[in-house]
Amino acid sequence: MDNLNYYDIRPKGLDAYLANHGWHFSKAMCKWAVSKMRDRNGNKLSFRPKEQIYDFLRAHSIELKNDNGYDAVYVLHMVYADFFGSSINTDDAIAKYVKDYIDDPDGYDGIAFTRFLADCEAKGVSIDWEDMI
Image (cartoon, rainbow, N blue to C red; front, side):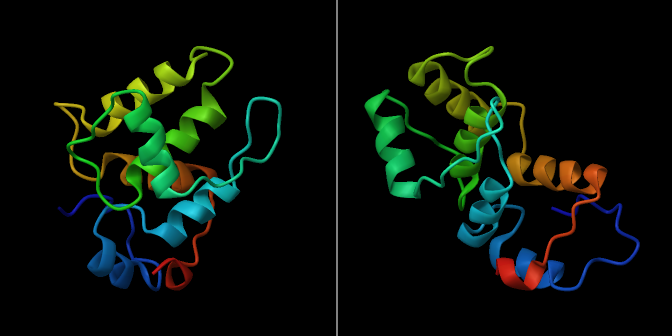
């Protein structure tokens, strides 16, 4: 997969990151991304570990088929930050959103990560790639 070619010169460390994780969230990248998130009231989100996310999803009868790395962990945090308390109001709806996003039949491998990178690019957010490996 060779998307995100908008870089004329790739940032230092990006190629090493992609060689290790592909177009997916590493644990370090996911923690960093979540550390930048705020809920609808402006409160910083607390990082929930992968095991806890999977326990949450299983409790709502959700099994992911296309999760890779920490993509589902990122998506769940993103849902809490962006939608919870507005268009999404229950834990069951959050779990279903994560399933719909990760297992979207017309999606593509790495969709969560590439959309995140596009947001960072649009906002001018710099990523220290070497710290994310």
